[in-house]
Amino acid sequence: MAKKKSTWGYVGVWVVLVVLTVVTWVLGTKLKLGPYSLPASMGIAVVKTVLVAMFFMHLVEQRGTRRVVLPVSALFLGLLLGLSLLEAMTRIQMARPNGINEELEPKRPATTRPVGH
Image (tube, rainbow, N blue to C red):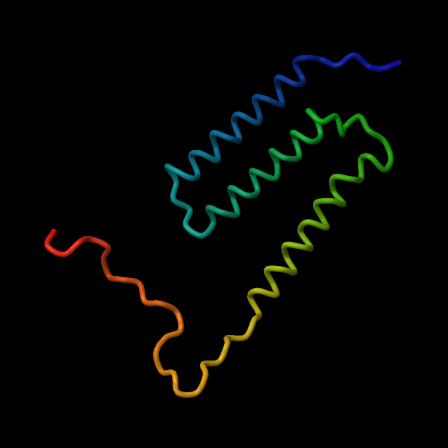
């Protein structure tokens, strides 16, 4: 026999999601956290994702392997992104061919305004 779900539980989770959305907006517009801004926003996004998955996708009610799918998927996604980022960060710089002294990347103009303005 299935338990009857309370509407107030869903409303409570929705209120928490709205509050976290407002906190994310305040962190991005009003408070200047500098380098901590991205980790704080990503942490809030992870909490919101877990809340949606657990309650609105009903993972709280699942048993066994169905409940393990979300954390295992998150682990593999983190591993894939982490290893890709690690590989990109540890690449060696390409050497310039002999006889080329200028930069290989095109130079950006100091300004994009037309002359005379």
